[in-house]
Amino acid sequence: MSPSFQLMQSVHSTVSSTNQQRSDIHFWKTGRIGELVFKGDCVISHEAAGVVLKCGEGVTDLQPGDQVAEEPGVPCERCFPCDDGRYNLCEDVQFAGVYPYAGTLQRYKVHPAKWLHKYVLCLEPLSVVMRGIQVARLQLGHEVVVCGAGPIGLIALAAARASGAHPIVITDIEPKRLAFAKFVPSCITYQVSRSLDAEGNARAIRALFGSCEYPTAETVLECTGVESSVGTAAFTARRGGAVIVIGVGKAVMNNLPFMHISLAEIDLRFINRYRDTWPPAIACLSGGILDLKKLVSHTFPLGRAVDALELCADPRNGSIKVTLSWIKWRQQYKLFRLVDMHKVDLLLRWHDGKCLPWL
Ligand SMILES: [Zn+2]
Image 1 (cartoon, protein in one colour):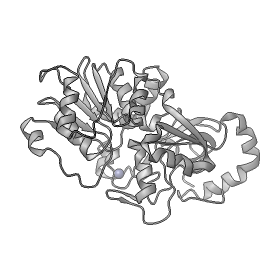
Image 2 (tube, protein in one colour; image 1 turned 60 degrees about the vertical axis):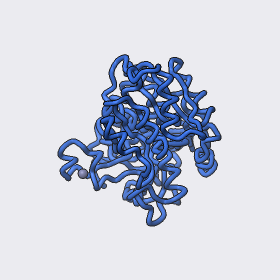
Image 3 (cartoon, protein in one colour; image 1 turned 90 degrees about the horizontal axis):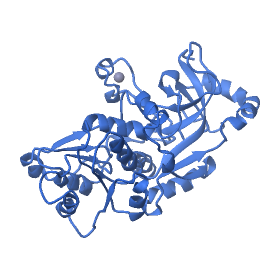
Image 4 (tube, helix red, strand yellow; image 1 turned 135 degrees about the vertical axis):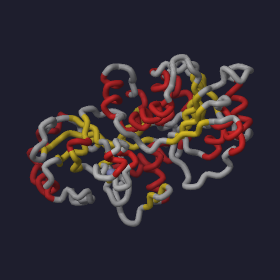
C-alpha cells in the first residue's frame, strides 16, 4: 500500500442533472465523451464526499472521522504539464468515473490524501466554475451572459455575481431552471426560443442590455456545451468580447459562426476541468462568498442510483443537483467502523481503483 493513500468511506456521492455532471449522463447513455471511451465495465460519477475511515502511513493532515470531498483527478506528477503546474492537462491523469478508473457511485473508495479536501458540498462543480472564472477574468460592473441554467450555469451565475459582474443575464430553454436562477435575485433570465436561430436568440439577449453595441455583454460563460448555444454565445458577446466554453459537448462541433468570430475578434476560450481551484472554492463556501446549498434539489439512497440518473437525464424534470447517499454522516460512523473495518483493510490492500462489488 502506498503510504500516501487513505481510505475514504464514500457515504455521500452526488450526481447532478446536466452540464458538468452531464458528463456522467453521457457516459451512462453512450459510453463516451469525445476521446474518452468506456471499453469495459466501470463505475461512473466523479463528484463525491465522504468520511475518512482509515489513513495510510504518512498521512498527517487527515484522520478517521474527517468529512472530506474528493478531487477526482489524480495526475501523474511526472509529465511536462504536471511539472509546469498545469496538472489538469496531464495525459495520464487517473480521473474517477473515466474508464478505466472507478467513479464514485460506490460505498467505499481509496484516494490519495493529497487530493482530498476538508469540505463536502458542491466543491467539484464549483471548481469547474472557478476555473472558468479564472479564464474569464471578470471585472466589477462588467456585463456577463451565462448560457445554461443547469448546475454549472447556476453556480457560474452565483460566482459571476460574487465576482462583481453586473448586469448578468442567464439563459436556458427550460423555464423551471430559469425560475431556479432567481436564487441570485438580481439576475435577468432569458428563455431560449426554439423558433429562433442562434443569431436571433443572440439579438434578443443583446436587447436586454440596451440597444447599442456597448454595453452588450463583454463576457459570455457558455455552460451547456450544446452546439446551438455556443453559436448563440458567439453572436451575443460584444465585438472584442470573450466566450468561455465551460460545458462539455460533442467531439466535433459544426455550425460555429466562424467568420463572425473572426471579424468581431471574439476571444473563444476553453477550460479542461480545473487546477488550483479547490482551496479557493473552500474559502468561498466557508467564508460565505457563495452559498450553494439551495442547488440540491433531490436526494436518493444509493440503491436508487438508476432512478437518480433517469431524473438527471431529462432536463424537463427540473432537477438541479441530485444527491445519492447511502449512509448518514457521523451518526452511523461508529457503528460502521465496528461492522465493516475488516472490509476496509481488504480494500486498502486492493486499492487499485477497481470496483469491488462485494463491498
Ligand atoms: Zn502528468
